[in-house]
Length: 112
Image 1 (cartoon, rainbow, N blue to C red):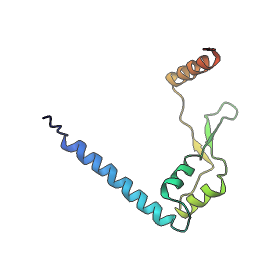
Image 2: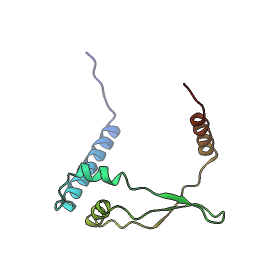
Image 3: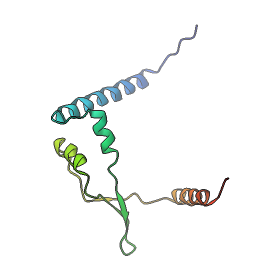
Image 4: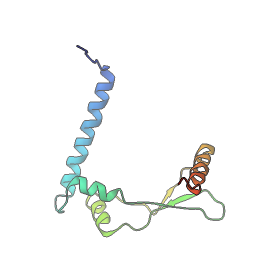
């Protein structure tokens, strides 16, 4: 018989994250109770919200947030979450540039 023992700090951390998730779901359910959709469906819709990276005249890049679809805008409005038009972009490191170059090279090769 094998007994697995978890460290107390890790168990507390897991319980904390699970409880935060539960509270978030309860709060979203409260905000979105007038809609004919579950919290899971609402979160799936929110996953489609995107940004577009822009860079003007060699300045530091920024992320532009396009106007969301009507359903997504409604979800965010009901939850009192404002969407900024522009967000600061994370500056790419040398490693990220290498990764991008590698992925482009892989896409250009024909592996048939």
